[in-house]
Amino acid sequence: MRRLTLLLLLPLMLWHGPAVAADEWGIDGEKVDRFEAKVVDILCELTGNCPANCGNGGRQLGLLKADGTLVLAMKNNFPFTGAARDLLDFCGKQVIADGLSIENRGSRFFALHFVRLAPDGEWRRANRWIDTWAAEQGVAPDSDVANEWFRNDPTVKALQEAESGKLGIPGLKAE
Image (cartoon, rainbow, N blue to C red):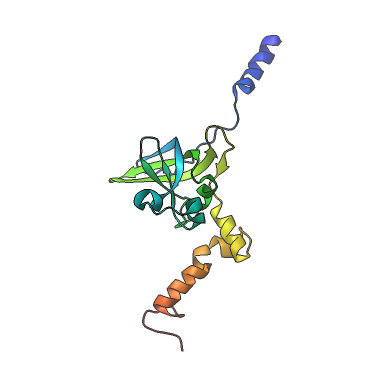
């Protein structure tokens, strides 16, 4: 009986918490990737223009590995949003990034899925962007408006209207 109890408890004793790993997408050239890096403001790294707190979320953030490789992090849940909201709390700090590295036809991408403070912080899913956007717009994160944020974003609408008019037809302005 002792052996059976020991055998049943052994997996629990060896378990060190949830093994977070990125979800595979089935894209050619993808691999689940986990690495340590410093969260940096990409423009700061490339140009030396370095505002406080990585630009307070107004700039794209990246991951700088110890070997000098600058990894441009993208997002998977919400198109065209980048990973700035998910990385901003870690500006200038070492993190462990978990996601998918994708290399295809000479292009490299890193889709951030999870992040934690190095060496052993709490894992956090990289999905904060829509919650922040929805709060700024005064809508629920799971609403139809938030699900189609790109059609409802005031900045996107203003840019579209400036280029194509209220009707969305280039050259035809509403009276």
